[in-house]
Image 1 (cartoon, one colour):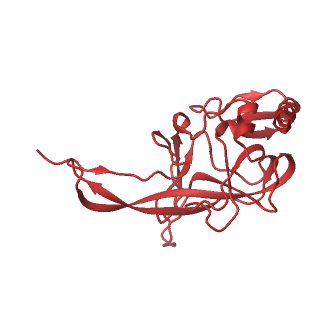
Image 2 (image 1 turned 180 degrees about the vertical axis):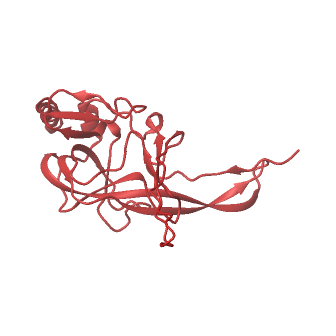
Length: 228
């Protein structure tokens, strides 16, 4: 009987313990004219469902506020910058003996925001928010993103419930960096509406809070409770 090999994967911040993969592919285009030798390929999109395994189960504003270090209204000022986190992992056989090693490559993206309003916490001079996913042509022709935490786009405006991970030995050993509590802590503003990414993680459209004033009122009320 052939031996089965098992990858022992170290726990990485915000990398999810169990997830299924749902691919949304967009056909890449290329110029095949005889006069050109360069080929341009449009990256495909890979979306990863991950709602079941986030590090936080907070859903209500009160629950999010208890875990957040910073709550802000902010606008994406720069496109996400992708980095690759590489780890050497041991390959084990069925008897738990090391039979080799492999390199794990995980994409993370850091996005710069302009803070418009601070509801809770001490805002940094420059706000950068990390998320799992991104695009690196040396790794793949696919853009990888979570279905309930898609990559940010320049100009989008959000209310964000953030955790300060500055100084994290893996993600930010020598810089300031934040992440959302979970997808319930990411609300995209569209006019007076707020689209919450934590509500329906298997869908491309998410539940709406009818009015941003309502959400701000809930945040203010929760902040008063924390200040007591």
